Length: 165
Image (cartoon, rainbow, N blue to C red; front, top):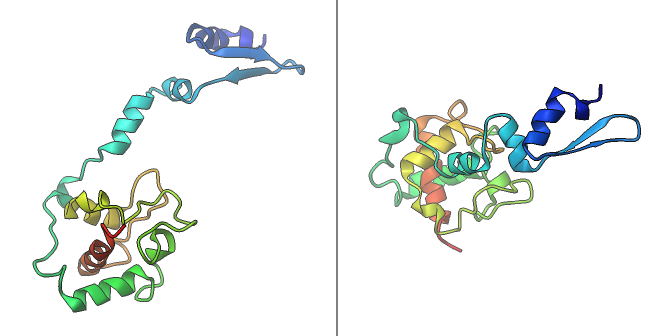
């Protein structure tokens, strides 16, 4: 019995999925991205909603930039060395986000930090993403490589790049 004629074939056909039997007797299934997601219990709308509205975990929700750090030249200088990868070999934000905040080829899909919309994200959101990374992206978390103070320093420096499009 071929796949197209078996029980899975009947289920897929009931969903309106195209089925074909190839010249070698192998079944070929053509699924749209939405159909592929629905086979595993997801919908495209749920996926878009999940990606567009991340929920900050409770332990990060009340995090705020320490007072005065956005204008403290020592903090900004320390943040810049972290961002550019000279302070810690394991952390190089500029490699993907670019020296000026504009994503590099390696950082395809990374947010453009010079976009004013990025400046609208809360400190808590940014701090969480820097600490834990971002799901379904190349962005790795840096909590294991940077102290909490260093993560705030790099965020303070990143804020200087935001909105300079």
